[in-house]
Image (cartoon, rainbow, N blue to C red):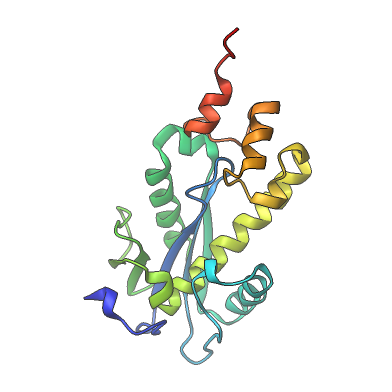
Length: 203
């Protein structure tokens, strides 16, 4: 089974790993990345992005971009998420990232249990792929660092919400600020906590 792969095994040449970041937050886009690693230039220290510190992710992202055969990052906006739902928006961002690769992969490995439709070559979904396959781990790092950078930009626009602290996740502070100020244009109105903040308070 795919799940039995050795930890962070590097797949065959011209295999693209694909992963996303930002399905759970209440605000901002969902990001996806696709990466084809170069077996001749292995990237040491790859792991599931959630298990790395922000500093480690940033350092690895620079190395991945410099040494990969090809990489691409895509996103689906909060408005797109509200229109087509978070799952479809995630799959859309993954598909776009694959199509943006400057080198056509021979195979695509996607983290999770769902495959986007319309991928350009043979593909396989791998549960916990970000901890099992180096290419998917690399993609998870690029998606996460891209989304974190976006959230820092959001903080500059809307400092009252503290996007630099929680990156859009529904922390107690974020929820309190959402009640206090209401949603900003980057909040996902289809998500229940945001939707509740739009409801008039009963008097």
